Amino acid sequence: MEPQTTIPHAFDNGSSITSSETGRIGEVKRSTKETNVHVKLNLDGTGVAENNSGIPFLDHMLDQLASHGLFDVQVKATGDIHIDDHHTNEDVALAIGTALLQALDDRKGINRFGDFSAPLDEALVHVSLDLSGRPHLNFDVQIPTQRVGTYDTQLVEHFFQSLVNTSGMTLHIRQLAGKNSHHIIEATFKAFARALRQATEYDLRRGGSVPRVSKFGLPSQKGFCLDREIIYYRKDSDSLRKVAYPNLQGIS
Image (cartoon, rainbow, N blue to C red; front, side):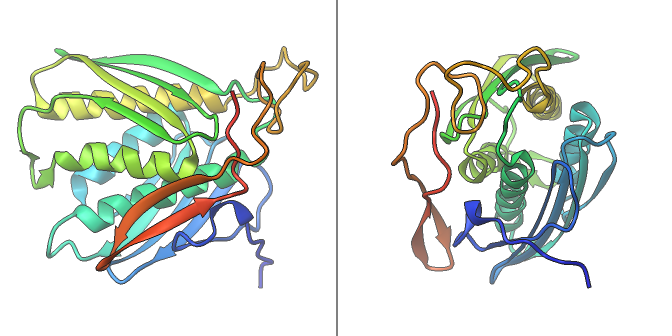
């Protein structure tokens, strides 16, 4: 039986995190009344995608994350999609964010920031992000139709908000052009993948000897907050639960 290590960053959010491998790999099993989700993310992969969320359009977008980020992304999920895709979409994103948090570990030596604009025919979407430990989403995207296939397009913003909440990422997404809903959403995921790839890659020039480095080993002029507690609220069954991450500290 492989040894399992508990990662303290994401306790009490319904996700069980285990790891039996070295390297920048995060693996998460998340079980709620509505869903069962298993996510494995390798930041140093080759773009392998094995996704079966039960939501075909979401799987297509996760394939973009793998291909354009050069991450290995494995998602297996079952959920109450006979009702709608909301819970599965949310819990997959929460698990991916938690897996990203685990895979980043102490974050020493990474670029931290990522910025990319992706065109897809008439659509153009810009993504800028900071792996700062401070969750924030600015989503300025206008998707003209309510659905793409059977996928509710309102769930795109909810996907990224959920991922931000558990990964501790600052994420700005801005649509610069676009009329086709599929193109706009796909350009969003492609731009996000490339920006995240930039942010998670190592900056070899820093060599781990940056002056006034933060606790995470990230470039920072202000250091880090000792007492910062990251909190978000999510609806689970019939109640709102407050979820805190006291070990995840924001940096400036």
